Length: 181
Image 1 (tube, rainbow, N blue to C red):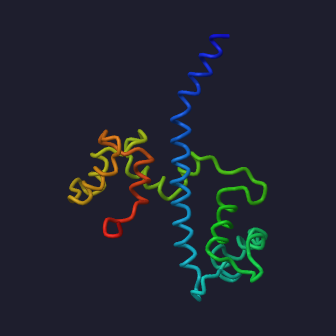
Image 2: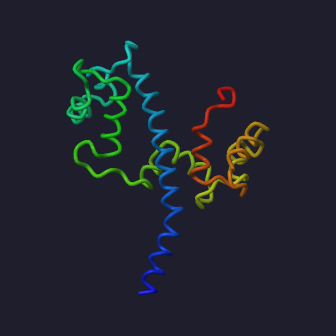
Image 3: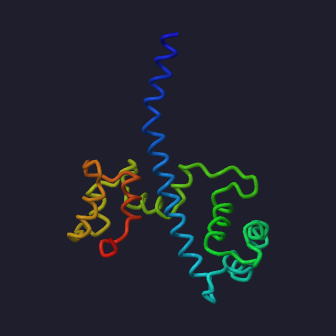
């Protein structure tokens, strides 16, 4: 009985930080997803009325893709039969992250791997060890990052280990530029 309690306690202690990191990673990916949807929505709202009608939606997915996703469009479109940004984001979440048609949601690791930010992270992380070191960061700028890039790296390195993990990297990417702070 003591061994079972000890193992249960050990498992709880070990999974605590992992779960916290997963929640933080998920929140950052959600923020990145929302930012990306805003960019896409603004680019596809051709008449700039703040709504995406079926024609604009079809231009995003093409005829074949739009037919596949029109049920999801209709599910989220209001009485005006168009999507505002919030509804558009819900449609894209259903389509790309699962849950809209009874599909299983995308696993967090897969979501990071296939995100724009995950792809950027892998581009910087040349060694594939799950961290972007100062040397890997410098290599992306032809070995000579300017003072602003070095300061950006240093301020993003929260635990001061001279490397950015996935969460630090995402926080850096999603933070507003210095001129907007």
